[in-house]
Image (tube, rainbow, N blue to C red; front, side):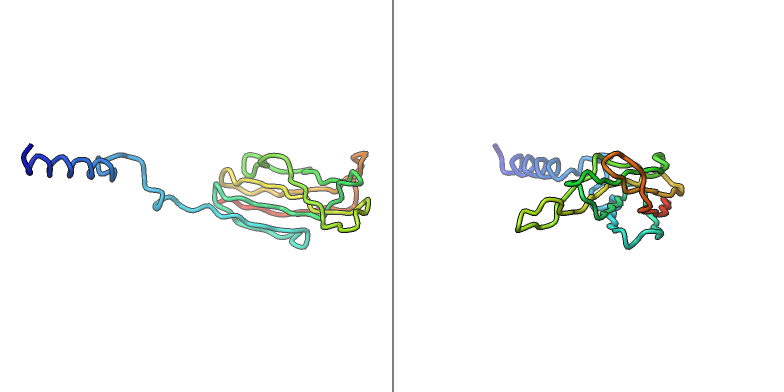
Length: 141
């Protein structure tokens, strides 16, 4: 095989492996990055502007060991959608005390442009509403 043919074959292998074949898939470097915003109960009555695909994580003090929990009572899911069940993380409890609290984290994904309020309520084990609320305004642009 001549040196010129070998050189041509090497060039073609490199050309194809680098994706220079004119594909239509954009490079990951050109795709817009998604943001993740974290809020807690101290941010209640606040607001945020997100882009479609961004994530909002809401972490609230909770006590699952006593059956208390947070629920979403209002949300326009066409604009902001909860992704999965909330995660619960117990506070460190070196003495193993019963009734120690923790934190519940809800994850939401911005779906489409618009505005919605996110309203949550802290409930007892019998699901009775309380006076403890978390309210947040979300704009997706």
